[in-house]
Structures are given as structure tokens and as C-alpha cells.
Length: 215
Image (tube, helix red, strand yellow):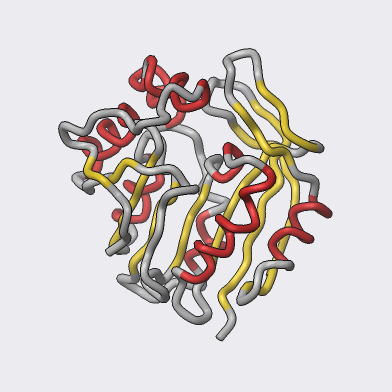
């Protein structure tokens, strides 16, 4: 089981949850959840799951509405999950029956070699650029040998704040490849870009990363 996580049930917001990014998701989690639950990611799941043994344990890191937890459960995988937003974690728990924990990437920790796969859809992109190498390294260490890590970022350069106050670290295909290739114990299998849905009904250009734990 992952460490440094608190249950969403009856949990008070994290000490630094007045951060504008988390505050956005906590302000109206129901509306954001409705905007993401029907997003079709069926073309993305196979890249991760082809590396995951049947019935394996998948971590949904930054689970949002619980859409992807529900998908992994429907395919017979076991799932653990966390999210920085108390509101989103609570909704995802109610949707899926999984006890979604409340934590940020920066404070999350796990014993080594816990997971058969880790899924970070539209979540790592909220981590500050200077913190990303350390966070990705923690995620890599939590994987079993030959287990996959998937992540997505908005395509762009540098850090931005959108009109809703959400912080993003944007990456290009090249900068994403360099970041993940620099992490000990990770082998980058594929980095690519494509248009895809956002949580607010629009579409944007995404950069996707699939890496595998070595040794």
C-alpha cells in the first residue's frame, strides 16, 4: 500500500490546498467530473495495459473523476488511486468503490516495486517543472520490473497559468523524452503528440509518454 496518503472520507483539505490549482477542482468537482467521465481514451489504455499482467495492481495517480479507475476495474485489474483534490477524490470513491486517497505528487510516497502499472492522465502536468524529475523518479521506483508508466502533458514550452488559475508544466515531444529518459530505472518506449479531449469540453494538443521500469 502507498504511504503518506489520507482517505478522502471525512478528510479535511490538505494544508496547502488553497493553492489555486487544487482550489479550482475543489470549487465544483461535480461539474468537472461530468465534463470528463465520457471522454473516450480507448486508444490510450492499450499502451499501458499491454505491459500489465492480468489482475495486476494499477495506480491511478491524479485520478480526477474516477473514469479511468472504473475502466481498469472493468478490465479485471486491481486499482489504487490518489488525487490532490478532496472533492474529486470523494466523487471518484463513490463512483468506483475504491478508497481514493488525498495527496499531492510532491508528498506522495510508496514502497519500491508495488505496482504493475502507473497511469498519470492529465495530472503530472500540474507539478512544477523543478519538481518533475523527483516525482517521476518516485513513480519509477514504485513500479515492479518491466511495469509501465503512462503520463500526459499539454504540448508547449515552460510553465503557464490558465484563466482559471490552474498551473501547468507544458512539454514538447523532445522535452518530455529528455525528462523521462533522464530518470534512472526508466526506459522510454514511446513519446508522441495528438489532439485529444480536455476536461472542460474542448480539445487540445497533448504529449503522451509511455515508459517502462528496467531492472
